[in-house]
Length: 85
Image (cartoon, rainbow, N blue to C red; front, side, top):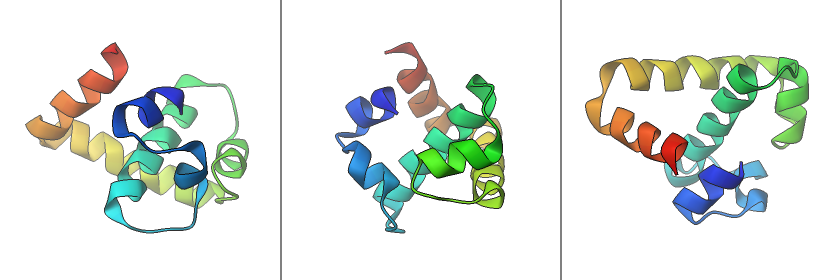
């Protein structure tokens, strides 16, 4: 979450919030993806950490981010920027 917050200028509280504004939603989905794919935590644990989201939300977020990585060059560049900072 630290990398995503640093890159986006958001706070952890904003990432964990209930808002569905895309400026906060997309970074939250990135955090879900990273939590699912870069840790050994369960989907429930990842969801709980990011504002009491359920496992299905984390799974859906992860699928969306993977789709963006696979299909959108602009997002892929943004993604690589987050990972390489």
